[in-house]
Length: 316
Image 1 (cartoon, rainbow, N blue to C red):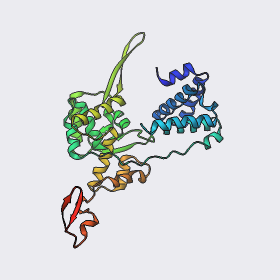
Image 2 (image 1 turned 90 degrees about the vertical axis):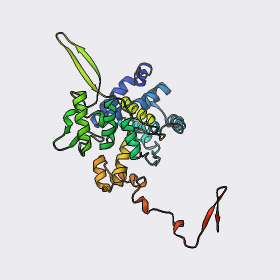
Image 3 (image 1 turned 90 degrees about the horizontal axis):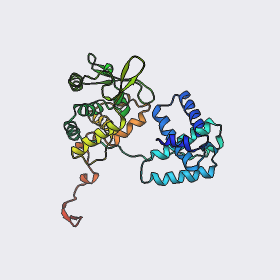
Image 4 (image 1 turned 30 degrees about the vertical axis):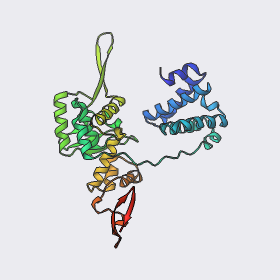
């Protein structure tokens, strides 16, 4: 039983409130993942107070946010972000502007992305036993895709004649074309020949549905957790000690392109970023012209360092 189902069963009025919330999210054309994250946050609040969130007073909300903040110190910031955004949405939905305007502003921690070396990427691609996982790593890195984007690839999205991949309805529900280069088409043709995917490039579990006359078989795409597991396991088996996720391959794609001399505006378009400021973070991790970088201390004339003793420099 999910946390939303528990809230519907245990909290009076939550089911009707949740259905209204889903309708309003649909009208606003919000992504399915956003609906799920907001829904879980609202259900958690409802179960905590045993009432729907829009009946709470400001003091109750602040007490709850304090608890979430304490938990975020030891975990992900996403819980705090989704809680505040979900409350802001339903307060606007119910016309509770006074409460909405008093919610705290979300301050994002500016963390530099984890980037893998080319040797680490090669090791990850050579490790998995399943061809599916090796191809998945190749296309995640080779095209810089998000987890949802790689899961949603259909066989018909690959244009081998033009060597491009049609990424449909990425973040912000935007389509874009990604160049496949020279190596990926060869890998993908071999994969399709061996695995014979019918619809989804990376199919998941199959399930059947019986009606009066026919038994139909339906195919789901690969699950989000399955993709994450495949990437983390490949990194572990490759002996990579960095804490990585599927998104780390996207960060690595952008950083390596920048290091290879690709223009930052071109990378912005390839990643599907709305603003170049989002792409600019890769300037902080890319090793551009690294051979020419040095410390100004290295340029001082007349300074002679002959060694060190217990961590302290000894000058001549």
